[in-house]
Image (cartoon, rainbow, N blue to C red; front, side, top):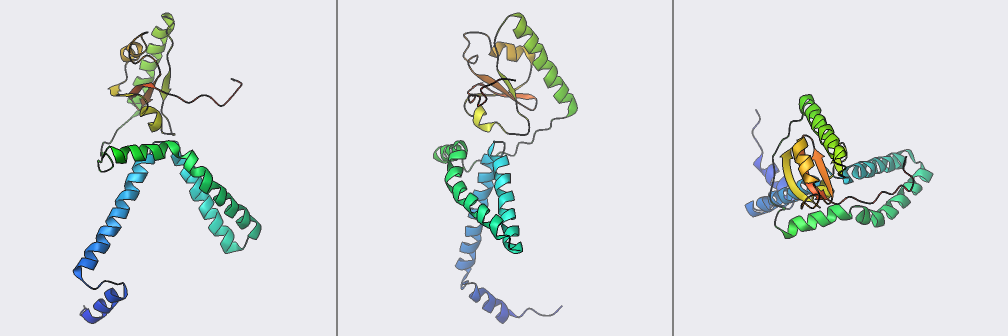
Length: 213
């Protein structure tokens, strides 16, 4: 193995503006902080409706780069104007996520990290569905209204945050008791994530459709 030329290494670091160990430490710290902030940002928007929107933005960025490379000037012009409009629209679209991020920052929760991993197999899924069906049958017999939302591909974190956190295993008895009239949790929706009732008394947005199917 050829010996390392320390002079070349020093010259390379000097070209990057690194002249001391403090410069090295400062650069590493700077990169680490930026990486951590991006990680927390993605953690906050994960499991929300913002994820499909971000995927759409990424597709538009790639399409713009392809249009520039292939010199499709008309498509490039359209996409550039779309980005100008998006720069105004995105803060409005991501308003719930931005609010959550600021709330986490204000409460000092931005530095907290959760490493919980949930396993949700076919047996748990079948059991969850059976419990929801049983609860619906019981509630139907007593003519008790209920709003039960099951999270699928699109995350529902913003709605879960609007209610009372439960994180309880789904059972027909629990769901029935949630929607008993005049109880603290009956007013609102229960949100089910995987095989657990994530929260109850959650606020849901008004439907945009004026005609029901």
